[in-house]
Image (tube, rainbow, N blue to C red):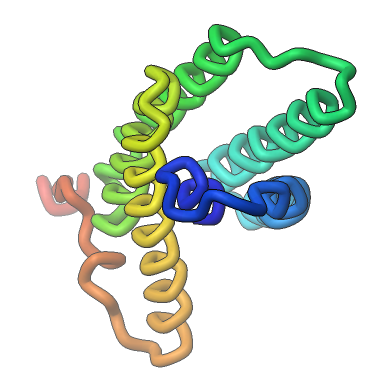
Length: 170
């Protein structure tokens, strides 16, 4: 959310705060979440959290090294990384068709965000990132609320594509 607010030019000063968030909340926290998902046997959660955690650690290291003058970030190189993560996210969006609507919307808007940013449309990518972050926050809120209140939340319990179970066919 914070980086997207800067990309959309809603906030114009203080972008340095993104670096710490990238390293710890975006990076380390998601890497740990990925490990926990792996231990729980959730391949989707493991691969998604671990990959995006690694993305944020890459962002942190790359921006830090550029700030220190040790590397130069080329626009073409940055676009290639963003496009690659857009492709990964598009593939994972396809998986969400069997999961739930909330994740479907998060991954839909996330791959759009990556491709807009890869195309150099930073402000549009920023606004799409704000939508993505809002949907991700809703999904997190709904997952916790569903567990705490022990009540199903339709956007979390119904997949976009319903597949009949094998036992129902017989």
